Amino acid sequence: MSKPIIGIVAKHYRQDKKRLETFIRDEVEQAIFDNGGVAIGILPPNEDKIVAKDNWQEQLTTTEKHNFYEQIALCDGIVLQGGGYVDEYECFIAKFCYDYDIPILGICAGKHNMVRAVGGSIGKLGNEDHNKEERYVHSIKIDKTSKAYHLIGKEEVEVNSRHIRHSLNKSVLKVVAVSPDGVDEIVEDSSKTFYIGVQFHPESLYKKDEYMNNIFVNFLKVCSLYKKNKKEFDKDY
Image (cartoon, rainbow, N blue to C red; front, side, top):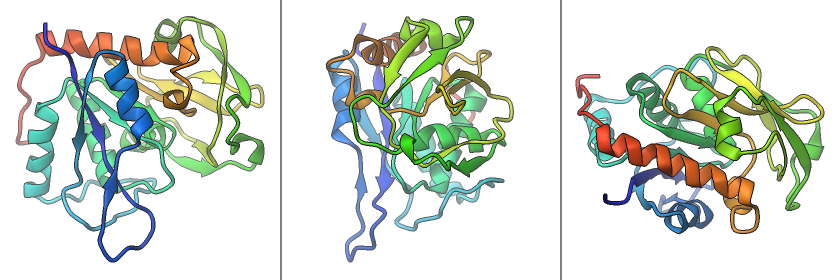
């Protein structure tokens, strides 16, 4: 069977530039390639930046939505990257994947957009200890009944931490892993094939940490099964 194709959602650069650009982090794409997938970019529909906020409302044009449909249709799974600037179209993609049960992994800000997409809300985190660049910052404890536990393969693991926000209202999602000070570290909807968001950055650790690598290994396994059985979705969404 051919390799699963994973669409990594490109992000607008936060800085104001004369020539606008979007980016995909090398660590994210490399984690997909190194674990047997094929990474491609899901590109923004236009050059305008529209900040994603709580109480998110979809505001893409019909043409912009259809441009996303055609891109997503090429993919067997989606990754929402981390990064300080988050755009409205990231929430649209998360909601589309939720509604059509397309496997999606959210990382840091990507997790936040998955929360917003289903009606949740995000708040600023007061504890600056979570915003560090060290390889490992703290542990997390994972609910053994969760999909995340089977994804990672261990109840307690060490993670990195470079974020200043966390989920407040998780809506339909369940918190299945927390840090020692109670910050939500993984959210999921167990009724979906794969709708999981992580607060940390496994792409920065996967080469040396088998449990972080397990996230990509098992995500790609799910995407391979989805590839084998996927059906066309309704493009009048």
